[in-house]
Length: 410
Ligand code: PMP
Image (cartoon, rainbow, N blue to C red; front, side, top):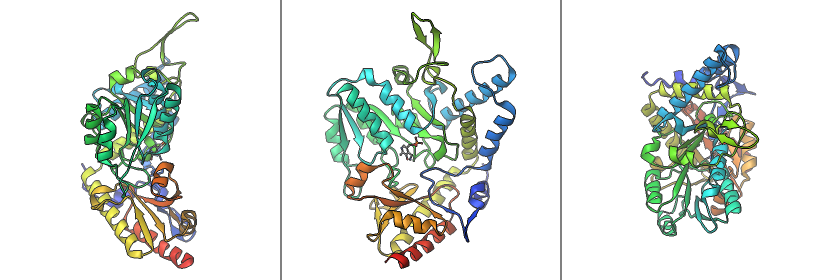
């Protein structure tokens, strides 16, 4: 592996080289979507220029090339998260689709009054599909409460597990606050209680080394676009037996063994869960993103991100009139990727617009986590989020811009 050369890593992201007005772009919205390295852009272009063909279908050479590239990424993703076999990797269009596929696919396995536990900090993508499952089956959703500083309430969780839930859906890292769940312990407890488990890893995958066998969950889901890959591709990892037991949400071409008007037989996993033409270029682009990440010194990157997070939090607090949300007693240990804040009583949207006028991109709003916002008693907040390319100058530009905003508003 190459030695840690941060400017060289940042240099690979062309979008970051632009200026907006008089200011260099300061991109602190990586949790919404990451920027893409040149290698991902080039790989997708090359696919369209040279190899474009549908997968799994034709006898010709282009199709064979596209298929082997596509299937190689399945293996690559499997290794990246340590799945037991490549068939446990299903290509979807993103985290949202992955969770919907599980929630739909479990319909026949749930009954009235079965309990589904959901993290109060969950993204809507990890709430609404379970609500729909509950409507179809009569299952009951119970939110797992949070503590005063927005960490999962472990005592309440233990008590809820005594009700023998059928399913536990957790986030690994919260997209709104950057709080991290102690996922291995939480899953072990859920398993002891006999529950199926799904972990939303959308905000974890770019920052942590993920080992699904160690986490020991039944399903782990994430999106390519948050890990330096393209939009339009996501992953549903599932334990083989659990994937095999899902009813396919989408049916049609590619997912069948035989079709007749009397009787249709479905094919095997993974194809059974990948109906229709997949996002071939995006899957191949995701492969390039993983190759890119694997070529970097992951420990140095993790240390760099941790230092930046601490610096970001300290600088924000030293401004005064800033409230941070979801900060544990030892912030260094407990927030990854995102910092949520408000400036005095100012509306988050006003702060966001004034920051944007200085080329600082942050996210403002409820962050697709309305139950979390109402738990925090907030209409919304601003979120600054970092990635592997973020540097100290970004944080300084952001803080400088926020001082200007403060002078304008307060
Ligand atoms: N879960 C979490 C924790 C997320 O951060 C996101 C994206 N904001 C999603 C789910 C949904 O991902 P996607 O929009 O890529 O389907």
